[in-house]
Image (tube, rainbow, N blue to C red; front, side, top):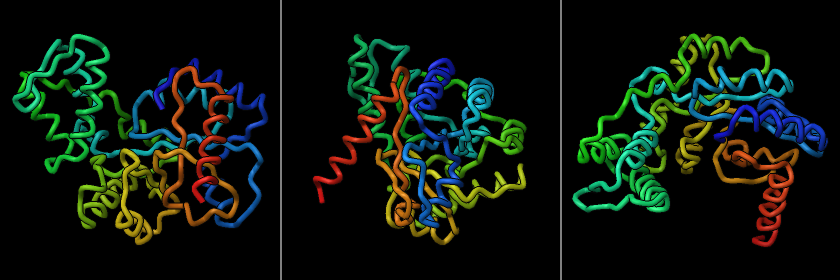
Length: 282
């Protein structure tokens, strides 16, 4: 999700007024495995990648409402070894009125053209055999666009330790380099999660058992790797609902994305639609 602290504060207040209970990821896991009844209206909050504003802007809101949350860490961003290529692409498109894309001229005169270019660029990057970071890096170089240092966007390891010690916060494993797991072999998938887990353990003493697929993209091979690592859960980005006893979904837990201005009613409507669509497909 990408929302302001003010919106998050209003959303939590509204959800509690509407009778929602906020659970930790570990509480959800226990309920699913042990087939315990969940509160009829339950929400679990997760945040991806390890952005520093999760701590500097978000933590006080979570504390004010006593809402537990899990931050999935991509450890290469914390180390500063890799860039979040989507910010580089956004920066390039925002700064130019036209660009070259592998020799082809692309107009960026209107917001709609910029948005279309971003979505097409994202899709191409995720499927590139070069890897998304290298692919977007080459596009930036083709246009003489220097990618700024984006390490300050992310938590430091001191920040991670602070979160680890906080009673409301949980740490999750989002892989080391934030790779599209649909484009890499099993040994790379395993290396991604093992390396991230080792780094988090080295800096905090905690080895996460909750995971998230980068971009929500995964394969049966990725699920198999996580089973071999004794993962408790793994989340994707496809929306869906859960009921007690649905332990078969533990390595493909659905999620809804919050966006600025989204109401609890809108979230409930999305949830109802997804449930109805699933029922009609049976």
